[in-house]
Amino acid sequence: MLASVLVMALGFGMASAQEPVTLVYWSMWNETEGQARVLQAAIASFEAANPNVTIDAVWNGRQNQTLVRTAISGGNQVIDLMDQDADQIAGGLMREGFALPLNDYLAQPAEDHEEPLMDVFLPGTLQMFSLDDQIYQLPYIYNTVQFWYDKRVFEEVGLAVPQTWDELLAACTTLNDAGYAPIAAEGNEPGYAAFYLTELLARTKGPGWLQQAAADPTGEMWRDPAVLDAAQRTRALWDNGCIPPETLGYVWPQGQNTLAFGTAAMELVGSWLPVELQNATDPGIPAGRLQLPGD
Image (cartoon, rainbow, N blue to C red; front, side, top):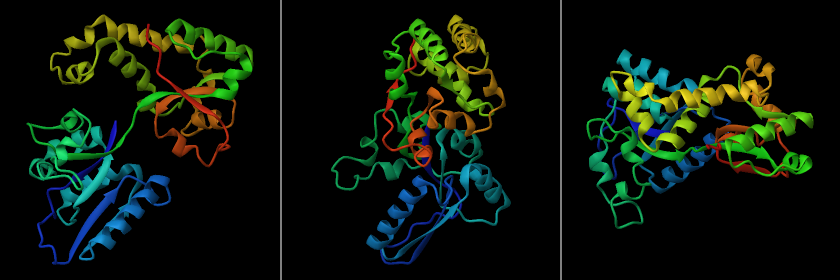
């Protein structure tokens, strides 16, 4: 999952190096969030280096994609740049024709590099959400999914990092016996819950399979036995007490706060978690990371 910048089809024009330019940028971040502060510093630095350019930033929060789409559909709002999770941009904006392709821009030399900008990104990243061989998004955050766990809890109960599925289930028993909720989860975030299914399928079927399955108009790929196996393993986490029953009533960020407060041992979530918990945890808490075990 990538948070990306998209150039919108309305309002983006070329200007000479000296002509005053104002770029309107709508963001998925709230103004006081850590990532917003990083972007604010980047905007200030860019404006200082390019005194003819002003960036008008609007901090919309997580409903940004919906607000951008509504504004542009109304025809009375100029938006040059926006950001959101890449899949939301692809599904909500690109396919509706609200974007400009960036292929020509990406063919230009990258700043401080001799190679083209497109060669600076990790292989396959730009093409992940291309449409008809056109690239509309520039990733600026790479989010990975893994278990974050409290090393202090693992050391207290004498747990080694689980390497297999059976070891993960056994770790849940040990943690429950010690009075900890083994796995924190969010009750009202289906995207978070889907991590178990998607990560298990990615490990079993390999890169690209999920994307192919999602695009399969017949739906036959979802009959693959690996899908049922991943779903059954996900259910097994509940049946084996890895995820507390009260999780069903949690409203984000109630689940991840149990990890921050030391009552839960681990959570399968994206690499944004430390930023979200930075004000709720002791900076000295040693956090560990591990992949969701497969076989």
